[in-house]
Amino acid sequence: MNFLEFRDNFIEIGCVGTHQIKALYPDFNTNNLTRWIKQGLLIKLRQGFYSFPSLKKQPNFVLYVSNRIYKPSYISLHTALAFYGIIPEAVTQITAVSAMKTATFDNDFGSFTYKKIKENLFFGYELKLLENRNILFATAEKALLDLLYLYPFYNSNEEMEDLRLDEDYLTNDLNVVRLNEYLARFQNKALEKRVELMKKTYGI
Image (cartoon, rainbow, N blue to C red):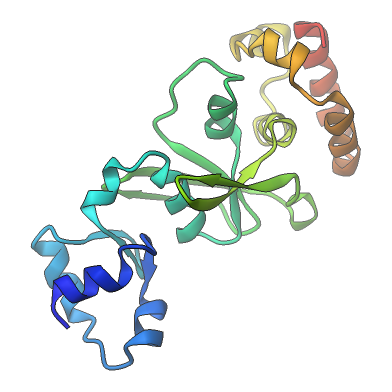
């Protein structure tokens, strides 16, 4: 199989794993992948996962990559909060939560960080259809809780204010009932205190 045939077969998948390649083409020579990477025709995302340079221009494709190269995981923390407009900063690193160990992968698409969370706390996410690709995304409420749970230093008025959460979103769009329901599932007193501090700081 030459590269053009390979590209035609897998460009729609976008992020392709060697297991998918071998499942469709058992006799495929994986040495081709190394050669195509050296030629700039293919990008290695992490061991066993590859994509195409042209997809770097596709909006939100990096979010899809995040989901694909480390499973199970969902977009959360700073990336999700920036997506919802809850924090003002443009986020360069893609942040996600996973039931597996904490990990980071750097490739031509960017830097992908995964924070480990207990399996019983792996909830509060939904599928979002972005550019015809389904991406697992934390709800706004779960993204906030994940942040305050995984970054416990947000435990003072000053630290909470430094987050610069969007007060309009918190007042008009945040689902406080859902936030409280999710919080109860954590069964974590320290987190409950940080959430109360957030509510007090931002007048929720």
